[in-house]
Image: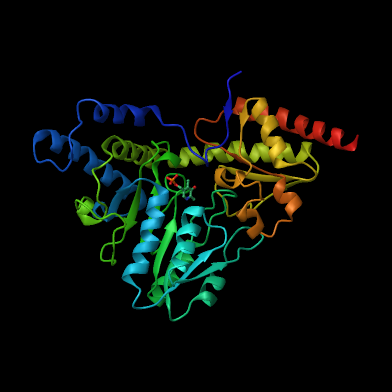
Length: 383
Ligand SMILES: *Cc1c(COP(=O)(O)O)cnc(C)c1O
């Protein structure tokens, strides 16, 4: 039995073409891009080519892209940089209650250091109301940080309206776009962004590498000081194979974006239709309309998500009960709590996320097995 992977929001497999592009940089092209001899220059070429690809994917210019170790570092860098550079103007940050921990935790850290953070509530549909953002702003607000799409429920936020607001008020605007870059159309200018975080391993690239978009002219203070790499914006010798992999992944994402989203949307919509007709008391968490095409987050009445997850795993189907981080605490996730989901339903939640390698046959298997597992649990409970 070949296992079925339906957890693309946690991480994606590396595309074979991405792996091929990386290999020379794990072999003969081992130079340090900071060296001026030919070994260094060869590596530098790989890095700069990747920078162009990443910039192109999000509508930026190459000079605005800084390579990092991933989404977490990019988020930390953006938030802490704004706190340093804007502290004379104010000390207030506006974010949401359902951000990834890589935004929530640096915000909490800054609170311990004298900053004030508003964690906006989200509607029961998992979408932030730009009016709420507007009302939260004060004279002292220096940063708005709102994710593009939520990693658990896949809801897409109205960044265009929020970006307009930020620009009008002269407030810096950051988004964690780790779940959207390479998956839906996105342009940093259209959204009026000053900072954007992305990560390679969510778009068929390698783990441990990502990027931060920093708009030209925006004040910036690095997180890592040292040898002055990345024009002083992120010191440490480049992860050359990783960066090359990210560049290739970005290039491929741009070319395959609409095809992939049609493919996953078709599979997702069909699975949802089948599950709705075969399982009673099943609910979709988060807006149907403002949603990533590859995300299905469901709650099933009177069945624990954790037990479903385990039983699916035994049958070779890998899904998630929420975000990988939340599953460890045993608590219903902060995202589902932020939506105001009653604990019973929050505990019954299951996240199924699709990708470009997901096949019809795999989804057919889930369509067969999931209702059977649910029925088994319910029969046992009734007894
Ligand atoms: C995965 C993820 C991150 C963390 O990215 P890493 O590269 O794993 O550090 C941050 N934000 C969101 C929304 C994510 O899905």
